[in-house]
Image (cartoon, rainbow, N blue to C red):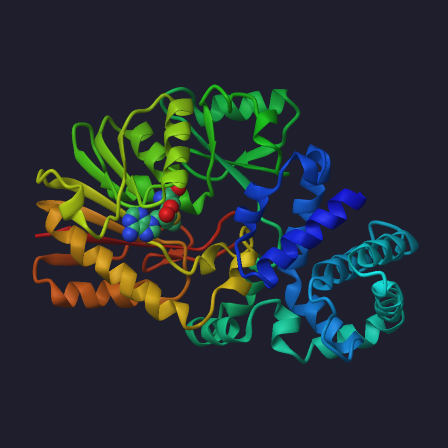
Amino acid sequence: MTDARALAARLINHVLLEHRSLSQALAESRAEDGDAPARASAANLAYGVLRRAGSLRYYLSRLTDRPLRPPELLGTLLTGLHELELGETPAYAVVHATVELAARRQPAARGFANAVLRNFQRRREELAAEAERVPEARWNFPAWWLRRLRQEYPEAWESIVRAQNTPPCMSLRVNRRRASPEERLAALDAAGIAARRTGPWALTLERPLPVAELPGFAAGLLSVQDVGAQWAAPLLDARDGLRVLDACAAPGGKTGHLLELADLDLLALDNDATRLRRVRENLDRLGLAASLQVADAGEPAAWWDGRPFDRILLDAPCTASGVARRHPDGKWLKRAEDMQQLAQEQARLLEALWPLLKPGGTMLYATCSLFRAENQEPMTAFAARHADARLDLPELPGARAGQLLPGPDTDGFFYARLHKT
Ligand SMILES: C[S@@+](CC[C@H](N)C(=O)[O-])C[C@H]1O[C@@H](n2cnc3c(N)ncnc32)[C@H](O)[C@@H]1O
């Protein structure tokens, strides 16, 4: 467990002090950071701390009266406070381990770490009551994010925030070419894994599991994909023989689904070569084929062969505000100012790709965001600028005007179709 705590602290510092993503930090963690179970516990602790970083940082600010020296004590102390809050490990063991870790970093920090945790134990109720009055501490989201949610969802913001503060569920997509949902549900049941049907191809597990434990995963019968993300492929309505562009494809969740539903001539682009390799791995596992290219989708002159597409999927880079429960680091990494830059990038991609679509063709614009500035607003503006674009905001189960809100079985997504007249 000591290895796990040390690694968790490092992962947390990586996000909160160095402003880098948790998935990147996890990908960089290696065997010398501990064995597989230790790394899994570390990831679990880091996700837990980042989900509750608003309140944990608030507690820490009330328990200390000077900046942390060295600042890297942050990860260790937040992990200790989180473990005390969870109450799964005896408090004396948490305090002892946290103090030892702090001392490893800075011998003089031993007494300080001990005082912080002991004071938290004593003042816990009082601090929790105080935290209720500070929005960031109460809801575990940055203040700018909460203001925006409240403004855009005056009725639903609280249930959105609550849904996003719970650990995510794990959903699977059945590969229609190799299996049926009923048959896979029976196979999971036979393996003692509880699951239920949550969409046309979707099964949701009662408890998340490593993919290696899922019968049929290695053989390409299943993929891991959120139920809400499974709406993209059917909405694009890609039928056999069509030429399709998946402009921002990695890691290939939607690419795989499109190819499971129809025989397509599909080009998948991503500007990140490492991420694009994961598309190849996923398609190989599923027994599917597509052309893959590392390219900036916004610069077609560099990669387009001049043959127009019947369908284009633009799963645009966004704030990822709809998937905060799966990627809780994102809420502390994104800033309000990022929205403007992302909106410019989304508009650049839309403008560059529209001429590549055949008349009569459809572009599906998708984000995993809840914010209007990267969803309805760019779509309405685009349709107003282009006389040959007809905007269609699909009604989906649990969604309004293309906007799917986070709930127990789904993350938040936005879908809009642009038909070329
Ligand atoms: C939301 S993710 C796509 C998820 C993917 N469609 C799926 O379902 O698995 C956005 C992707 O866009 C890629 N990206 C960002 N800007 C891009 C650009 N200008 N050209 C191509 N890809 C880009 C990112 O590397 C990232 O992999």
